[in-house]
Length: 332
Image 1 (cartoon, rainbow, N blue to C red):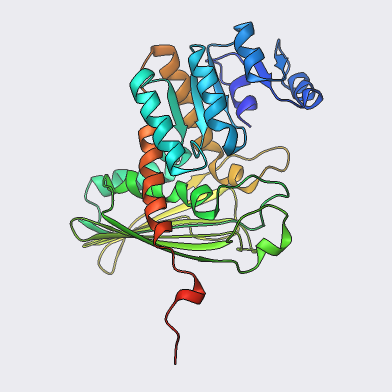
Image 2 (cartoon, rainbow, N blue to C red):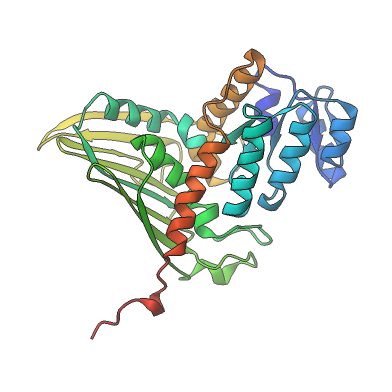
C-alpha cells in the first residue's frame, strides 16, 4: 500500500523496494512501473545510496534494527507502529534518537491524519460540546490475525492506535491506567501467537477526564471503528457501525438537539484490500503526504518517537495492572 501511494504521489519518486523475498518484490516493482530497484536487505539499499527517505513496514521485532540502519545512513524514516516490541526497547530507541537524530523518524499513527477524526478534534477545540469529560475509543477486527503474524500482544499491537488517539484528542497524558483482557473466540482460528483476543483499558486524567478503550479481534459482522467524546454540553460520535466500508458518519448532539451531521466518503479500490485500508486509506495517504512534505522542506514531523513512547508507557502501565477473569472477585 505504501509503495503504491509513493509511486503515485507526484511529490516523490519510488526508488526501491526491499524484501528478502526478491521474486515478490520484483513482481510488485513491475506492477508499479518506472525504474524501481529491488534489494534483499536494508543494508544493500543503504550501500547503494538508492534513496533519500524510507518507509519501514517490517515485522515489529525488526523495526528498530531497520529504522536505525536507515537513519545511520542519513535517511529519514516513516516507521509503522509500534516502534519496538517492548517498553524498554521503545525507551532505549527514543533516547538514542533524541540524542543523535531527533528529527529523523516519523511514527505511523495514521489516525491523526484521518479527516473525520481531525474534524472531531476541531469541533472539540472550538467548544462545540463544552468541556470534555470522557472519551471512548473502540477498534474491533472482523477476523482473527493472519497465520504467522508477529504480534507484540493485543494491547501493545492493537490498542496503541486508540491510546495515541486519546492522547492526541485530549492533549494530556493519564495519571492512572488499568486493563483487563481475555481470550474469547478468534485466538482458536489462527496460528498467530497472541495471548488475548479481547481487551479493555480504563485511563484517568487530571481535570475530571477519563477514557475507555475497547479492542477485539471478534467483531465477525465487520470492521468496527468508533469514537465518542462526551462533553458538558453535548456529545461527538463518529464511525457508527453500518457495514458500509466507504463512509464515516460524524454526529454532534447538544442538549436534546442535533448540532451537526457530516458524511466523510472514503476511497474505493479496484481490488479487495484489508479492512483497515478501506477505513483509513485517506488517512494513510495524508500521513504519507505529510512525511514527504517534511522531508522535502526539512521540517520536523508532526508525530515522532516521543509520541510512540508516550502511548507505549500508558499501555505498559495498564498491562502491569491487568486483571484476568480468574483474578476477578467471584460473584456469590
